Length: 125
Image (cartoon, rainbow, N blue to C red; front, side, top):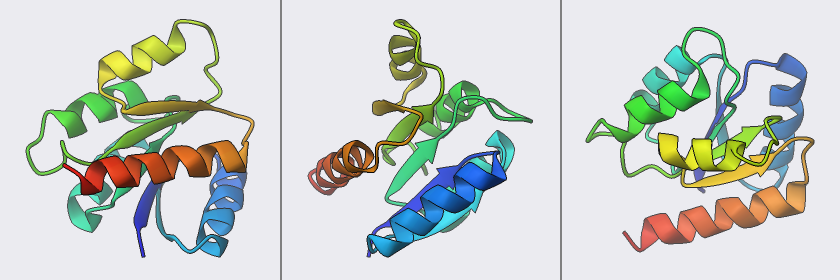
C-alpha cells in the first residue's frame, strides 16, 4: 500500500481528501503546516507528497525546496495541490521542486492519475 503525505492546512479539505484516498487504498498521513510536513516526510517516508502551497509556518514552495535539498527526502515526488491557478503558478511550483501540479477544486480522477504517474516514476528511479 502506497503512503501519501497530505500537507493541507484546511481541516475540511484535509478530511475530505484523506478519506477519499484511503477508500482508494492509500495509507494517508496528514500534516497541517509546512514545518510539520517537512518533519512528517522525514519521519514517515511517504511514497508521494501532496503539498498545498498556501500554508502557515513555512509555505508549500519553501517546504518543497527544503525537502528537495535534503538527501533523505529529495527522491519523494511532490505534487503541488493548490488553489493557485494563475498561468505562472504551475511554473513557480515546478521551479520550487514540485514534480507535478494540480489545482483545487478537487478532480479526484485527475489527481489519482498524477499520483499513479508519480508512483511509477518513483519506482523506476
